[in-house]
Image 1 (cartoon, rainbow, N blue to C red):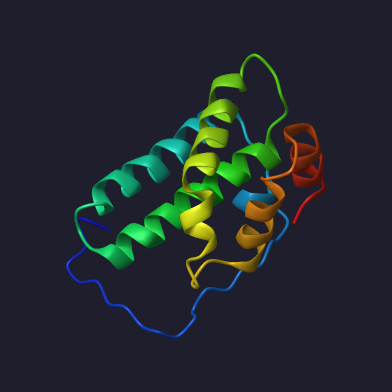
Image 2 (cartoon, helix red, strand yellow):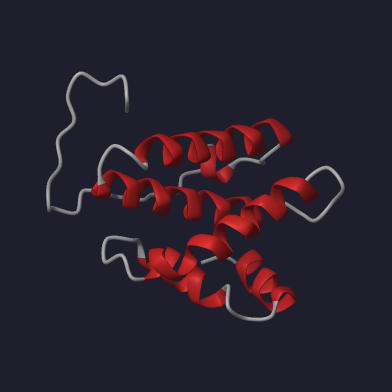
Length: 130
């Protein structure tokens, strides 16, 4: 995004989500993908903090969404413990302000509400999918 020649915004909702067999979201997530997903989301978030408020809010939403994705797509293990802890920390830190952003996806809004439940129940419901 920072290296783009041009960035345009619109008030229209252009996001369309379709999960297909073989898509990145339908495939197994390994440690390398977890690292990449969190690194990208964290880097974009940090860079957008000083660029503009709308981009900061979008990057914050992406970070929270990536954090939910990591919790949904990984099992608790030694290998994933640090990433899951980091994802939970991001959710706890940004869930309140992200919830009141009118542009976030409904599934993220639902996941944020679930995140206020006791942790074992929250993780169990999250694993069932949104």
